[in-house]
Image 1 (spheres, rainbow, N blue to C red):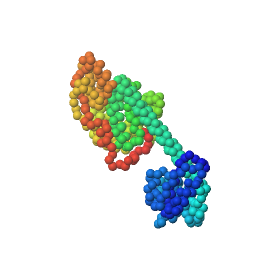
Image 2: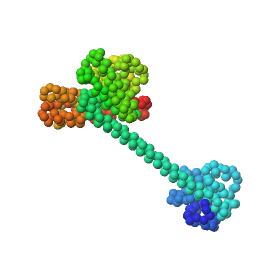
Image 3: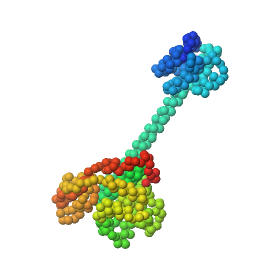
Image 4: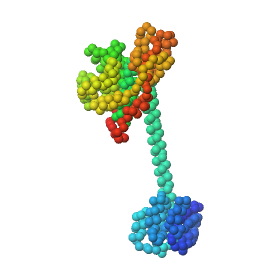
Length: 434
């Protein structure tokens, strides 16, 4: 600290001898060029209480304070959250006392026999300067930590925004594509519900990639002939040539998706969505079943369950048939499907006009024109894109009404809350990325 300063130096002293306190006051006042404010206390408890409202720059403490020592008072200071630099004063000048004091964290030590204005000037000046330097360092560190937290917050926000934007864009794309092939993309909406519910059940850390994979899982259908699509939707058997065409649709969809940035994992999930652990459905029977991504395994059971339900099986019968296909599916995924199916959405059946049709209703029968042509097949989840398309038909009074629908009695959020395990510990579950 400079010999002259305009900064007010606040000093607090604790000593049970009033003569010693007065001597300290005089010595400090004799230091040339210093502006000081001195407060002395005979009782350590009063001195500690005073620190609560007095931001002292330096604290002077006598080593002997009745039943307590200065080191004990210093320890109590720290316990109370006071971190001002402390200088210990004692009439006993042995080296061990100084060592013990410094080990405890006291900044300096002055034998009372050496007390004089120059000695106090050096000790107090150095202690105050070190304290202020440490305060500056702490403030800079806090600012740096706050800046780092803000950068991380912005990165997370930008990541969330990117993910939400990506999901929103893909959902918009699927809505547009659903106008071209409503069967395929109605099916993907149903599959997404199962996959999302299973992923929640299995506590996957990353859900959005699975949701995107579900929405785009049927993208390859656009390359299939209408007669093949119709047979698949109705659960009918395909002939060998049609079966070969159908096995190509996952790879067709995956190749299209790989062109989108950050969609490599999603494309990989879709490429293997028809693969099974026993090798059934894999191109030419080749490949390692153990390498099938977990996201593909989720998609496979959801796709097959939807296919069986579309063919007329009840959910119970469809699940029994899946379980009977020994070795084909991942057992943990099949267990999750059974669990979420047991708490599936409850519906009521009804008839509505086109004006009353709205998400998230599901069509219980085909929507047909008055001439009998199918506009939208049964089982489709009602979307706003579908409604926009149907408006054109109702304008010319060419569509049959009323429309048969299934109306959910609970929301998807409520459904997923019902499906969440109640006994598992937080953080348990798969750590493998989809």
